[in-house]
Length: 360
Image 1 (spheres, rainbow, N blue to C red):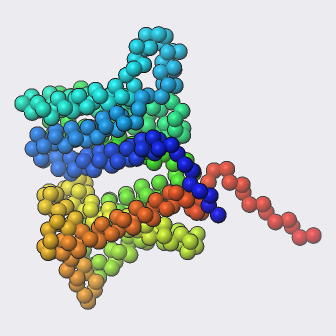
Image 2 (image 1 turned 180 degrees about the horizontal axis):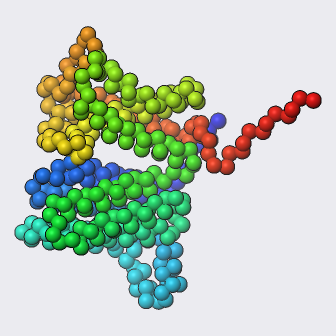
Image 3 (image 1 turned 135 degrees about the horizontal axis):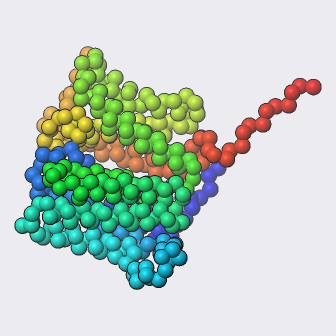
């Protein structure tokens, strides 16, 4: 029997929600940039600036750096660092926000200058992530992940800044990669799993996203000649998660369905983003995603092949199905996240079953 969910202070909850939302914004816009490297450079710079602004908002709303970080520097390097006490995350957030504003209001500057300003903003953000790894405000694996993410992003930005001959579009792509990595990290930090079974759920979600975005889209982009292709595709959405029901019983059906629907969303929303990014397609994403989200009315967006029957799918119907699936996935995963004890999973520290005594 589950007990009541653990209550957290509203400020902590708001901070975690902020991290998740801004992380998702950073991930979404970074993917748009990576999937459209041939966009005009001014557009890429504006998109990157918006992504960076989301990170600045996160820092401004989630407070100062942990005290342990400053104490460690003071013990190691003496009082030289005390004057930095007042900076913290709010100071870094304000610095990044100022950089973004300078970029947005100064389009007359050279593109290289604007990109370098954005790169410096990303560098400041990832110094904060590395600093986060030294505190005790989260589980060790989360802090280690934060430090590793920050170091990787700093290396990427270092390459972008240190190699002047690199094309400007390549610099924009490197900045987008750093922001994408940071956005994923922000989402994980915001979720901040406290139960090992929540970590299991997070791994399942990441697997579902990879499975849908890469493996399913790879098949869907190139392999539509299979008879009754639509039915076959739906079966592939759910196939990996039937294992949960086979091994754990029917009590896991809601989790299996939620993960399968998440795969279907990754397929329908990420189809041409992944096609452009990984498989060399050059689809104009604006009109396509507008059709997928239902904004093109009765315009035909796809045909569901069900063997002897073919079902035309208009834009409004596709959009309606995407919104309905997103609501079901959100509700299902939120339930399992809030009730981790319902997830049947072997976790570290579980006692091994005691073998029965031999007869006699």
